[in-house]
Length: 483
Image (cartoon, helix red, strand yellow):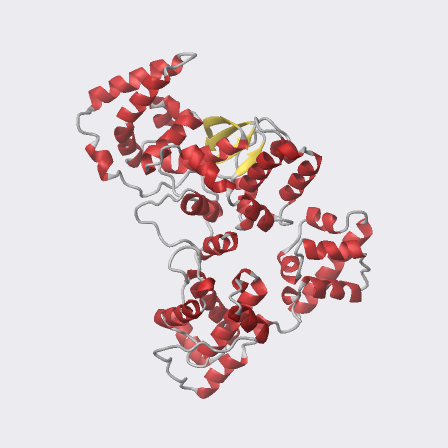
């Protein structure tokens, strides 16, 4: 059996057979931390392994050695991805497959899956059941063709969610993740058949070249967001001279120890449409900050976002919405990051009254983890140069993660292209300021944090922009799990 397909219990048995004796407590940790064959194949950090075997370096070393041996032996034997399924082989033998039916009839699923479907249980939230459903659908489709058309895929997944509506995606058209999973399954099944003549011909017809990765980006890519029609209307009555007068007032207020909040609010609103047009036309961030210095403050950044998207209290909206999913995010992040271990240590030492704030901060910091994106390209500790030119939060008031989770009033700064654009008090305001900067300065989402940012935009804040594409499968899957 392939390493990646082992359950937690099977993995424990495999380790025992290889000579690693586990205590009952250690076996329980494998189950509690959801450490199965797939997790081990993906790779555990030293901190994660240390959590499994807290008091034995010897067991940690032996565990690493056994896993390496299992991976090596697996690479020397044909795996599932190297051996096509019988259904795929049968199509090749037939020569001309049976035409795809105009109305797809769902097949019977394995007994354990069918029982849960009949009982209307959301079994698609458990990977093993979801994989079985996809496998059966793929094998049934493969009896007709190895290269289903888009309409073929759609007819199958629509039939699935029509019969079992509780399997619908929580976002989008309701079947996007099923569609993408089926496409990937077919691709996996076809990959071992590169020597088959029929597959070779179709790969030549439909093949594509993989893009090569470029060098580290030195600057942010700008988004293609345009000025809204209502903003163009509000430009009426303003010209360069009147805008300059408003800007002078803003700069004068910024120099004061206690600026007049009413005046600042009025002048920021009067210059809003003009400012949006300038930013859309590509004026550098540094020039915008020089002209409108109050954008260096989180509160004004939030007001700008609120005005852009018609949200009265942008910060409160975010707080209320994200609070609802904090427990789910923490559950999905459990055992998947060294940072999560620091959070758990901090929580053990904290008083119960602080749990709510700590959990909120931890979920916000660990959000990239559940999308398998890097936290250090989203939030970092210390004064070093950020790993990316895109909006990044740097924590200045703490030297370790435990303190970040424990203390509420920690100073942070938001940087774009290495330059500080905003200072905030608290991790929450720092992260929300960095997110707001993408819209305020018209910056496109980078690939390394795209899913995290799309999740915040579309699911948490319910913010849409003209030309938005359907959410990626990875984002919809997480939304399904949190629903």
